[in-house]
Image (cartoon, rainbow, N blue to C red):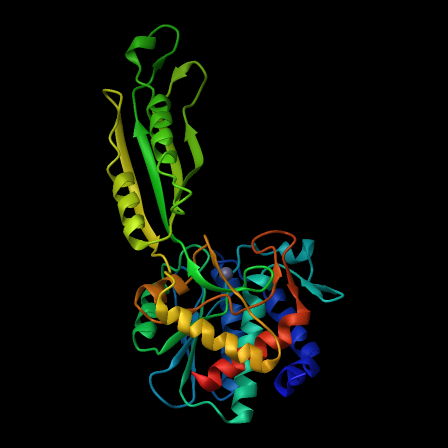
Amino acid sequence: MHGLVQEFTYRRDEMVQLLRQLVELESPSNEKEAVDKLSSFLAERLQALGCEVEVIPQEQYGNHVLASWGEGEPPILVLCHMDTVWATGEIKKRPFRVEGNKAFGPGAFDMKAGIVQAIFALEAAQKRGLVQRRIVFLFNSDEEPGSFSSRPIIEELARKAKVALVLEPSVPPGALKTFRKGLGRFEITVKGRAAHSGADFEKGISAIDELARQVLKLHQLTDLEKGTTVNVGVFQGGTRANVVAAEARVEVDMRAATLEEAEKVVKEILSLKPELEGTEIEVRGGLNRPPMERTPAIVELFNHAQALAHELGFDITEAGTGGGSDGNFTAALGVPTLDGLGAVGDGGHAVHEYVDLEYLPERTALLTRLFETL
Ligand SMILES: [Zn+2]
């Protein structure tokens, strides 16, 4: 076994202990107070490692933590999100536990194990003394809902960075992410006219009828060959069976592989027109995350990581995903981005979520070598 992998193998229990602490500091995106506790915990830990640390206060979401260590420009940007999709109290239903090589607990895989890797890789890199440039870490608090407050910070840091490394979980069984679809979100509301469905049927204009027609048009925008999907995930409307519905609304999720396609589909959704006379349609929303396209610079960065993995004695593969991350923002700015460098495991956003601890040492070793060679 390579010495660096061996070192992290010796320290595996310590890493699991930190993972336990992070998981037990529950941090749902919409519970600022809870996330702030995790921000403070990380800020202290990074300060103890000699980082220059700035806690960026937020009103709605948890405070972001920015940490910087080392010298040499342009820096390496490392992105980790602290927030999870799990409400506080989930830990009581699913306490952190280790069974064999698997660690379970809310947010362990997405992406608290990635934070553990970042901290241990930094510490190892500091001791080895081979890092040639500054490393900037951003721990943001609002990735899951769409990074509304952290996006400008991420983009500002990315513009100055040489590369962006994203510690999101890998694609099972361990692939790095070199491609991500872009995603858009929309809310569409239709107004019709209410009437008694028995006495005055002709006077009513059904918002549900109108919106149902729009849903069919929306779903026809899906083109699986191109990787474009449009999903109406929520449909609400009407009040009673015997009332012609005056109002209806849908929530729509759109994914596309290229910016060109994404912009085309967004335009079509924004320009939906009513079919039934007397109805009104309002479309709100747009592209939230631009696609992370697999550019030559991203391929080169992946090849570099793969060569490092081979030196360390293991192989890594690459894959794409329909899910978005903060890597979408950095890649869209032309910054070579490698995503999915975090945990091996499965079940992100699901109750069977777990981290495969067997791979934690080698993933951390790979991150250390990336810090030393980029
Ligand atoms: Zn995530």
